[in-house]
Image (cartoon, rainbow, N blue to C red):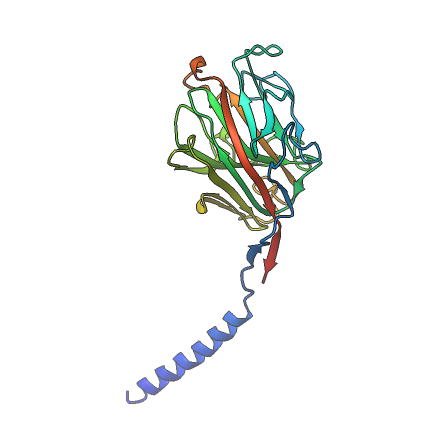
Length: 279
């Protein structure tokens, strides 16, 4: 019995050395940071149509898969730069086959990104029936059925006017999307979302996607299965989209109040900071 204490101490010492050696051999988890200077940006320090070197338009009145009620146009009454801001404006005005007009700007082919930090300073529209969004889609179809949701979607900010001041961040993939009830996302209340400018951001790395509002993270989606594109198709370039939808499956859940129009989403800047990996 007198040998018990020394024996136990020796055992602990051997265990500590073995465990320390094992710990030191384990690779450290990667840490990420982002450059302090944007690699792509639009400060909207000009007037007229959005810069054609950076933005194109999605056009049409076919509902966009969401039963939306607007016709997206490239007219300056729906999208323009004035007073140092991009203005996307939804109007109660007959356009095409639709009773409303709006705009949907895309950076595809002019700003395609693989990873990075995306910051958009914006003031949102308000009123029942509005559905503004700041989001991203894959620039090419590489996976599955070559469309949505197989190739992924990143929602940096979505807002529905019937739920004022609540903004949403989401991701959509083949495995995780609202159409099958497996959507991954979260929401947060933003004080005066339609009366003041706020910064909506996304940090996208090879291991996670983080969604932030005014510098505070409120949703993070982490890659769990490295080789399953059904869960993580976020290893290919994506592009930015800025739009206001009217009505639709979500935005129109409580109808559309025609008395609110016109409604604007104003964007002070869009900045993309490239990823710098630090190990």
